[in-house]
Length: 497
Ligand SMILES: [Zn+2]
Image 1 (cartoon, rainbow, N blue to C red):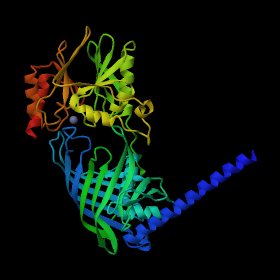
Image 2: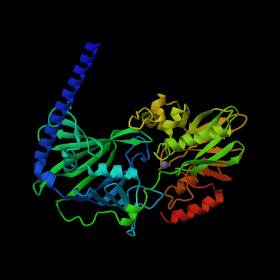
Image 3: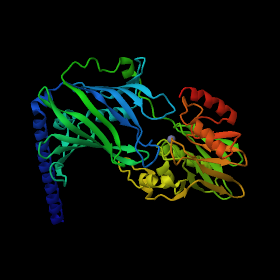
Image 4: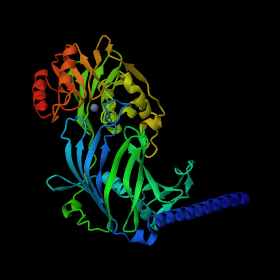
């Protein structure tokens, strides 16, 4: 017994020694980074930072072709002001969409952070409190510069791990240091093994579509401003298909300039942070054995079809929570028939937020065969930061691919799936037609709430080609409408293109 205790004790002491050694080696690495940036004293004394420039912000998961490039917002003006002492930041952007889109594509964004309060300022200058999730995102955003992350690592409240070496030779050789900031944010700083300058910072986020996502911002093209080394380019990528989420060139770096008032207005501070959306699914019967599963907790809906011996869902959008609620509702509507499959119209991330959930529930995914590869990748990733149903289930994708058409038919129901031809929104977009009730069931062909309709002519052409003159359109986005209502709305939207 005594022997067992002493062995355990010896092991604990060995672990403590490793941690202590790791910490000191990590602290040394951070000290070398601070020295390379302009000196520890100087870094700690900086009050404000401002970076101004331009760049692009790609739209993650919205590429027309699943294997093609992402559509991008061009950001002709970008300005981030950081008050380090007060933990305040403001990011202002002018963004112009370089892609056809149903909503206005020339926007000005102003996003603020003041300690534990995040807020947005609209075009009229009115500030509105943002969610608590935005606080974390913006705090990490603020740590996405060499000075701010090294300063956070120098904070006595931060924990710094033992440096790891990557396997690359110069000039790609890096020392990787894990940091837990005093606020509890976890990031990994990569230091150039030769210059000791920060090369990149990485952190993990949770995605409904992808599970764990590692985000990495690289610092490039350093310049000296007021004795401090500052990057002139920031490139952020995610660990899915090497997608770039931001690429900004800094035309002007300013150290200790006047940043003006960055505090949240009193009314914003006293307002409650917006609560997460309430999820409710209401099932609206639209024909025998067909329900429109609308409700709240997302702006994309699902449709349910009842066959002889099973149920088929149309679309699993938004999130695990929303899709779970939709699946529960479907099972409650016809408790004696199993829900076995889900039709997914295309890969866009607003339409596939519940794809992982559907796979976790054992549903076979029916979609155009061109979507199989991206769906497989999306559903084979782990979710450890916030374990989701898919990670817990250990299930893998069951996929039924189609090309031009696929008819799902038995004694109770017929659903004719077809691919949209020459559609620039997505070449692998599919929709459904129910001949018995003359219903169109679709996502992203039209939405009665759209401001513009860049794909109007293609929509008309595909309806004509398939000889569809529907009585009602049961949509994923928007509201149920008749053929005539839609054609009138389409003409209005087209005028604004
Ligand atoms: Zn889409």
